[in-house]
Amino acid sequence: MQKIENCQEIQALALAQRRAGKSIALVPTMGFLHDGHLELMRQARKLADLVIVSIFVNPIQFGPNEDLDRYPRDLEGDLKKCEAVGVDLVFTPTPQSLYPDFFQTAVTVTEITKGLCGAGRPSHFQGVTTVVSKLFNLTLPDTAFFGEKDFQQLAVIRRMVTDLNFPIKIIGVPIVREKDGLAMSSRNAYLPGKERQEAAAIFAALSQAGSLYREGCRESEKLCQIVLEQLEEKIKSPFRVEYIKLCETLNLTEINGLVKQPAVLLIAVHLAGTRLIDNLQL
Image (cartoon, rainbow, N blue to C red; front, side, top):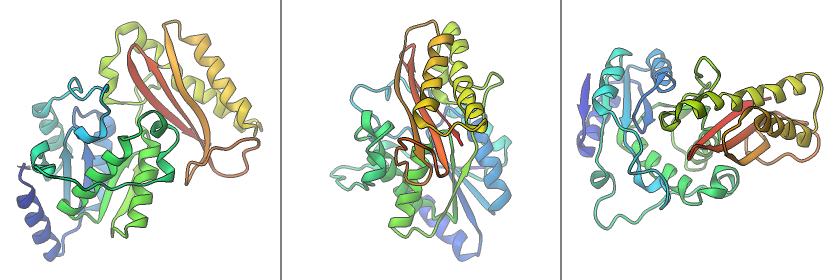
């Protein structure tokens, strides 16, 4: 497995691979890898001649009061995990290399970023789309893999790729969960023992709404309300619900009233100072 830090070097390598007729898959990550990330890599390995993983804690997608400085990092462990699942190349740029002096360009997706996570993190998705577009230009992938846990992010990336005519297929990979149902996330490491156990209530609450939906309930208000009631019943520690929304799957337009099209139930909860997101497709 090869490790590259230099932007010009990885772009030259990618160009050479494309000229040689090789297919390239990219898995963008911020590191501190868990099995959710590794599943993206396993899926990429099935489809591409060259699998590239980027590890970069992207400063421009963090707000001023967010956890950039304390975001968990373990590059040595990450490299071992990448090698174990058959990754060919790991790209580990520095902030200075991606955002040199006088950097002043941004990629913005407008409407789909306004609600949900974008409402409370107004600069977040611009940071995501800017860095991902740079990674696409540096690694020249045929396919790129993203987890469905960050459902809004996946929708935003798909919108950007469509709107800007990137010749890349975006592949969403289903959520990988802990044994108790909690969606795997690097930020789960922040949770103390008690709160970590209670965090399992998030998926349990979504699952309860899913059961209600399968039984015939199509009222968005009732489906969201059952999620809130389940959280209040099962989480005894202080917590705050940022949002519980039922949205149309493609463009994430909020559904009010009856659900008449493919939909996704999305949630963001703050527990023990940790922001946890999850979703359930209906």
